[in-house]
Amino acid sequence: MSAPRLSVDRERCIGAGMCAMTAPEVFDQDPDDGLVLLLHAEPPATHRAAAQMAAGVCPSGAITGGVFEDPAVDDERFLPQHGEVEGPAAAEAVVLRPAHQTDDP
Image 1 (cartoon, rainbow, N blue to C red):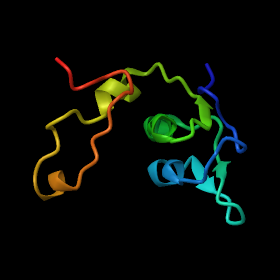
Image 2 (image 1 turned 180 degrees about the vertical axis):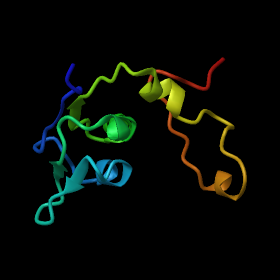
Image 3 (image 1 turned 180 degrees about the horizontal axis):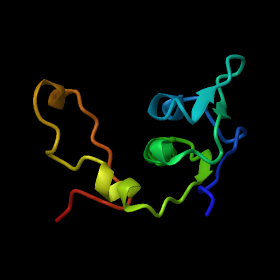
Image 4 (image 1 turned 45 degrees about the vertical axis):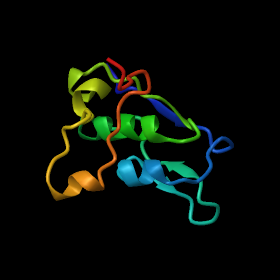
């Protein structure tokens, strides 16, 4: 079975660079226009969680594909939840959750 395939839409990309910061092994930014560059359309298992996270944090939704069925890279399992970040970094931490999840009980 082949790895899930990612794709990017450079026309939709706004050059925020979240993908390159989140998964530098999979994404980069074009030095000329700052838009996304896909380095690995089929990332190895060791980079799939970061690739899926990068797709989730892309503000323009320019990254598609890559639905990873491995439970180890399921958004709800690897993303920290509210209150899980502790210590000095907690004040500056950005807690990411799947878009469908809210703080409402």
